Length: 163
Image (cartoon, helix red, strand yellow):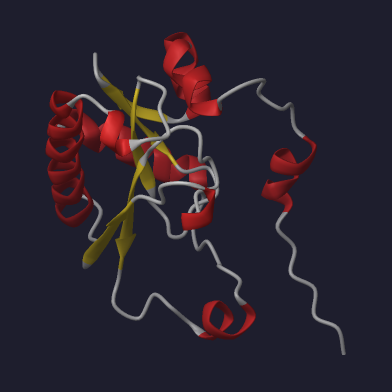
């Protein structure tokens, strides 16, 4: 018997309009589109945006405005700012979102697993005890248990307290 798993929200990824050039630079340069792009926060150095195809509900990224694929080329002040935002982001995910833990990481380069290798970004992935189930472990498929837009609205409101 064949099992079918439907994920209609991914149709936008497959069939939707494609951004020309770097998707992160597009978000950086289009502040009036922050709601559409699911930006949680922005300042002079970087912005925080929800991952549209997350590992877990509430997964977001901290991204410098400066386009670079090399962490070592980033201005030290910008890197320090990103890490300060990461601390606040972890606090927000634990206190306001109920995360039991948080994975933080960067995939630097395509060989390291970066999906968007041309522009560095730091992932914050909230985790809960027992959030990995059989479908993740056996079928290499993630089940997103709640509505993305609802999560964005909640984190957008909460982010005002932390950033």
